[in-house]
Length: 132
Image (cartoon, rainbow, N blue to C red; front, side):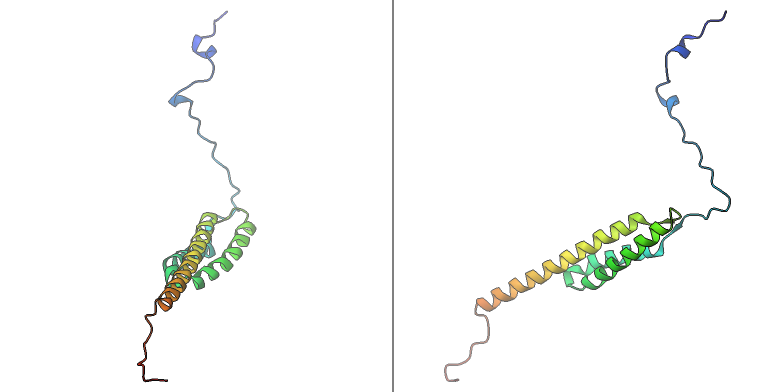
């Protein structure tokens, strides 16, 4: 009768040799290749444009367009059932669009406060005493 070696009784291996490689996924030959969504890329670009132009209040337009397009892109990604990629781009584009809207709102509030304070300071035009 042969004895079992000691390393076989020690349990699972630990260390670098214990790293297992996931099995390769076998796809059907007729499955389409995953494709990047162009709508998702457009949402990301519009979100960046909204964030960059947000302090100039011009960020409202690309932010609104990006949010509308993001809804369509998400529906396309769900309908693509994994063969259409771009979830992260849509998510980042939406975050950037909201940041652009917040910057535009902050710019409007700052401009309003500055306008009210400049009017209250009396820096307006002063007419001579002889005018009625």
